Length: 236
Image: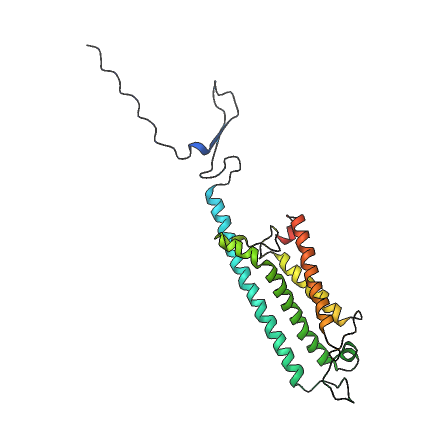
């Protein structure tokens, strides 16, 4: 009798990488294969080579950077507040203040009095006191402008990319420190330089409005720059 037919070969096990395997033949496959290059990218785009694992690692790295950036963000708030408070306490209690109005005996200050009448140590502490205040106000104004976009990122449960000034740069980018330092420097040069003759005796509201507009202007200019140039290497 004829031999029984051979059983069919077993079917290959399911391949979960089937849709993500790219095979390149560098020779005619009808004859023989010289080189077989296989690239497997599970869960990702085969053309990009970035798998799900790489995406998760990138997101985790961004989340860690955001946490560190937020911690440093809050730390600078406390340091600036401590410098501002200690400088104000020293100016009021050290006894180094020289009367700007020796006739009327009024506790006042003006740009001319600061640089022409006060001793050097008082000038240094007074300057440090208000530089810290300028930094704090710049922080408050710029953070307040970004609260809406930060809340949107937190609502998506993806705080790993909290945006900076409505751009593609994250909060922990060094661009934010460039914005803060630029605003603080401009404000300090304005009230200490020969541009404005301010005095506490006549009121400081005009000076305060000018300084606030400067902070808003610096933030707006940096926002436009960061939105126009999305890949500045030094800020990444």
